[in-house]
Length: 293
Image 1 (cartoon, helix red, strand yellow):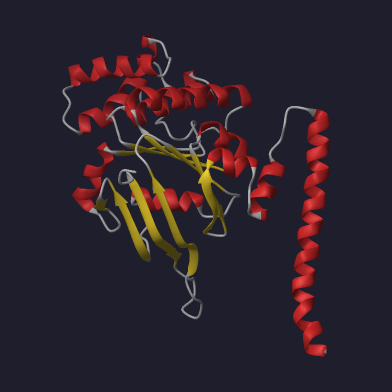
Image 2: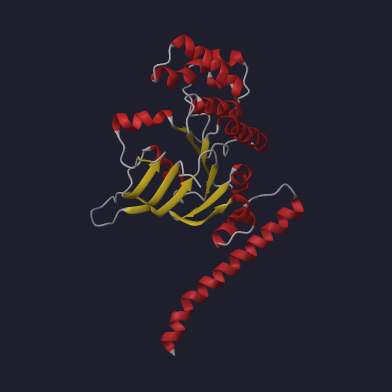
């Protein structure tokens, strides 16, 4: 297998304590992941698990306390300033909220041409590229002259995706890109991302709390809990036959469009939760029983 496009090794991220008497809060602990060129790694976990912090670390928005991040064979862990800005050609991001990620006072043409102008593309050529970008994400050419408020949530996310692919990046961090959309629109946006990957070879780090969404788009899945990777493997294997109890819990929590199956899944989840609580109680009581003996 070739060298991964993105390689994260033994990464730690800490947020400073509010008091000198307290230790810094470890948000990520010993995280290691590899992401191959042209594939999608789904990073899944509940809110507060640290998955967004990992994406921010790759983007250079937070400073790791330890560990390394390599991109395309180069160590970018502590890259700052001009060198970090130079990485914008190759690493882009699609944010969660399509309503706040677009400047409401700029036309779509200005939004999409802004990254092109920043790297020296002539304005006339930028206009032509904008038309191509809109076509690529399935929006009409006249959308260029309109404002973000004139579009639905799904259309705004398409515009955000167009902005992310404008510079032909190698890697796109997708941070909960469909969680703010309804189910039918989610499917449309996911299919768009898959088509773009098929035609351009772009690589995705896809962050989500929804295991069913991650299963739909990902080649591999990594499950994060409490700042640690608890399970990592091929998407089908992790989502169909999970080994870690936390992954099984996430799978049971994912809704299904069948009332009877959903009721059965809810009952299974409650039984599974009760069994976990019983195991935890036994683990706490066992040392005490030994001490009594």
